[in-house]
Length: 124
Image (tube, rainbow, N blue to C red; front, side):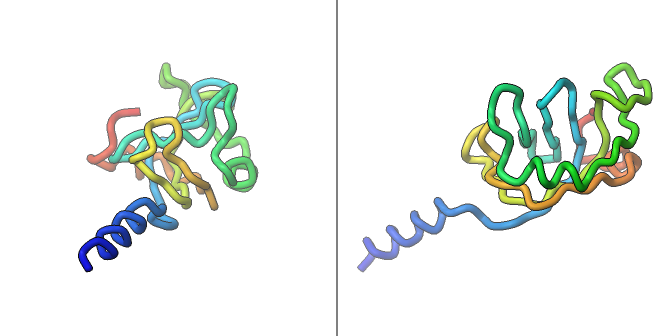
């Protein structure tokens, strides 16, 4: 009797948790490297030389319209740098740092002040 219960619990624990929204620093330091960093860590949405998370490309085209970012020297730029964003999708921290984004449904750029005022976030 205990064995089926344990098996069911193990199978349910292995399934993705479902859609969730994560907000934090949106890093685009170099071409094709895109990371969302929230209080739980880094979520790699795209990595140069590797595949992007499923759904990232479509979500990206609707989320960002060449808004200004801050580069890592603190200057305003339209190229590589950081901003603040929320991503809705499926995430799994147990999969490791580079495979932890299962899928992205949407991205939304939010005011920089939201990330700046979030004490749970590390500095960009």
